[in-house]
Image (cartoon, rainbow, N blue to C red; front, side, top):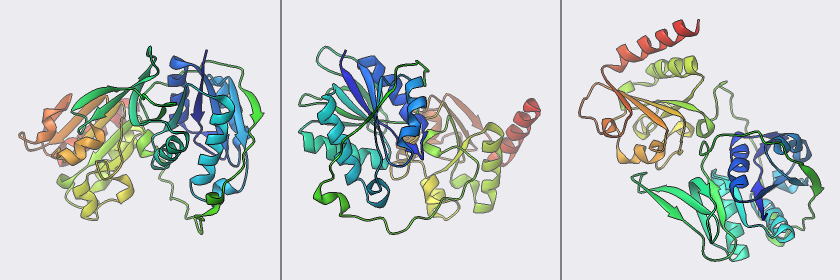
Length: 320
C-alpha cells in the first residue's frame, strides 16, 4: 500500500487534534508516515503510533523555531523525496496552508486547500471542499504530481488504530532561503482555559446583538458551561467588543465544530463563510427574519439577554 505523508502539528511534543484527524484520513488512502519537526519531535511518536502512523520521521533543529515557514518546507520536501508518497496532508492552519503551497510549487504538484473529507479514487485521492461560502460541495482531484492537501480541523473523527510508529531520523539540508525571515520576539497568548477556536467541538459566538463588550460575559458563561470556545462576528470585533483572534468568518477564522451556537448574529454571508460547515447550528436572535435562520438546524426567536442566561442555567443544573 502506498504511503501518505502527514505533517505533524505539535507543541513541544504534544500532538494537536487536527494531526490525529489527518492520520484517520490518511489511512483511507494509504499508510500514514508522520513528519514531526522541532523541539519535542521525538516525543510525538507514541501518540502518532497509537493513531495509525506506521513510521515517524523526526528532525530537531533551532531553525524551526527561529525562522518562519521555510525550514519546515525544506524538511517536508526532504521527507517527500525520501518516501515518494501518494499524497501529502497538512492541517489547514494559516501556517499549514503556506507550507502546503510552497511545497506544491517546489515539487511541481497541485494543491487543494480546506478539504473537509478525503477518499480514495481510481486516479488518486479525492477531496471534498465546501465552496462559495459553503453553499456548494465539490469533489476535487489533483491531476498533476503528488497531491498536497490541507484539511480543516474537525473534518474527521479521531480513531485510535495502533501501528508500528517506527521512529526514524530525517536527514534535512536547509536551503539559502531558510534563514531569510527571523522570529525576533514571541508573546505568549493568555490562557482562557477554553479550547482553541478552530479545533473546538463546540463554539458559542456573539454578534452585534450582544450590544457591548461587557455583555460578552453572557456568551462566555454559556461557552464555559458547555466546555466550548468563544467566537465573535466581524461586527462585534470591529466594534472592539472582543479580540480579533476570536473572529469567525471570511476574514477571520473558519470553524467546523460539532455544535455552533450563534447569539445575536444576523447571518451575513461573510460570517456564514466561516461556520457553515458546522455539523449542528443553533441560532438565537430576536429578529425572526434574520438570514441566519435560513441555515440553522434549530432556531430560537427571542432576546438573547433572556435566552442565553436561561440556557446556561439549565445546562449547569443538568450537569450538577
